[in-house]
Amino acid sequence: MTIPAERLDQITHRFAELEARMASGQLEGDEFVQASRDYAELEPVAKVAAEVQAMRAELVDLDEMLADPEMKAMAEEEIAALKKRLPEAEHSLAVAMLPRDSADAKPAMLEIRAGTGGDEAALFAGDLYRMYERFAAEQGWKVEPVSMSASEVGGFKEIVANVTGTGVFAKLKFESGVHRVQRVPETESGGRIHTSAATVAVLPEPDEVDVQIDPTDLKIDTYRASGAGGQHVNTTDSAIRITHLPTNTVVTCQDGRSQHKNREKAMQVLRTRLYDAQREATQGAEAEARKAMVGSGDRSERIRTYNYPQGRVTDHRIGLTLQKLPQIIAGPGLGELVDALIAEDEAKRLAAMAE
Image (cartoon, rainbow, N blue to C red):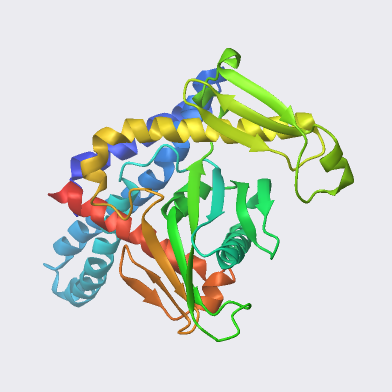
């Protein structure tokens, strides 16, 4: 996609204005915060735009040099090299200019639930959690469990964790959906392959200002925690259940000893779920456009199969199969899938813009 010169001028001019405002020292408070956000958002676009402008200007200069017999050979060589590099730079610029999801820069709430498959599904949910935990470590992110329901055989019936760092939601948002595993369970004496599933949900975590919750809309119950957790957890009313009455959204947290901390964690999950519901309602009007993208974020959609006997992972949305199951389930290898999903989404959005 070729970006018109006028549009490049607008980008570089706008960025120069922002640089001057930031350097003036006259911005304070909310005005400074907004200018900082605009600067951070525009900087990568302006950088690539400047590179494209420089390449185009250099091509003009080299074309003029063709008229000089002594310089012609050198000019032709440099023109050939530039014409190979320029389309790549213009593609990078087009990608950088794509409209960004306002939630891309936010941290995320990762929710994994065992689906069909009984104990094996819970074990798989645990495998998925550890995969994301190790992938997050590779990215320099922090993963903090918020609530969990452990399975008696290992793994989790359900686990919710907060993932913080740079670009968390942008990289993990295509992980939402049904993940299917095909393997021989440890408890299977006949060596038969079983198919189990777990559901992953990745929700952008809002700032408090993004979601306003009226305290009068909340019903808060305390009760005695159950399950693993030690004598203290099981003998005090530290568990919290919060019901948001207008939406009938129910959140529970019973993992910590402190009722206060459990309440904080439950409110964090509640804000995230309400924010996600608001986003879905807003994006409903854009549903047709989103059908062309990699995924709608529908958590009932089967998105990926992990086949242990064949050592392969298949992402059904983009038809990509990698014979790298051990590396992917170990965490670091997940990056190849994540990058492929992001690239496919960008390609489809570029194609939609070009139509």
